[in-house]
Length: 361
Image 1 (cartoon, helix red, strand yellow):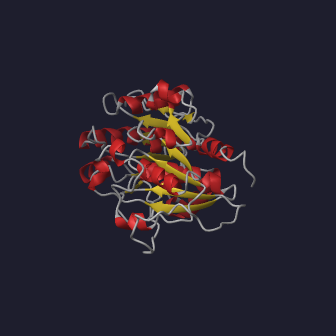
Image 2 (cartoon, rainbow, N blue to C red):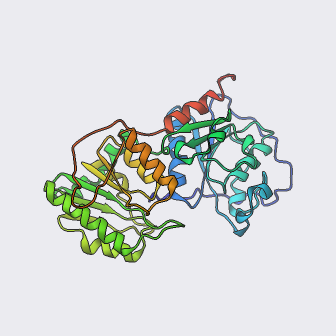
């Protein structure tokens, strides 16, 4: 649901066969970070959350937008530490000076990160969010692995940091700023505000119009029971038919933002304004971002609608009291409760800083 604008790359060099391992001199006092973002908003939110935390320490962060070709489907054991599978424009953005740190997420970006480390003569430290697969995993200096991903053998590796949920860009300052920006548009709606964050289809499961109707009816009844309003936003994965179904069934008073590319997105504003948050359980990032607030969070995930991995995440969030399940229509209620803010971005950033404790500056 988050739209990350790609960094503009100047066309400086197209021949990548040369040895690029020697950097010109650089100021030694300021760490530099490359954020390898791509076409997956959820991954980008996690990467930029960690980079935001490092930026607060004065580290210089530069976003490098990676776009892929069909060759990215090759296994990482074949792609190796290389730029195989990324576009020429993406390649041209990856030039020395090499950074102190690269932050990446997901399997597809892992070979690119490893290539950068190779070019820097192994000086660049690699930070990976989510396990990239065993091929080349030892090249990463730090891998943040969510507890719900399983694989206890991997978690015993010395370069692995176990985390709950996922890092995000959510901070009290961001929520306050975004709430203020959007507040006037919704001042006429009665409180409390029930914010509904809707994901949608995944590779394995559809988000049907029937599920959209069910969700809309549930939140409608809950809003009526507390005399409040619904602020709802869809995502790129919701789909046209499901979004239309939600618009038909969600009752007034409400404000519905149908996601479209290029439109201003009230997502952070809704999280900042919320009195209660209901989030669909199909996205790790959306669930984690909801729990990064300290507001009541309810996860909508009827049996059979999410993967085992997502179900494990939900159960962990319930056990740690970051969230509660959204019950069936007949017994669903909204309680006024609070919890600590969940955001492992600061934990990952602290582990990144620790990689440099043996160096000056």
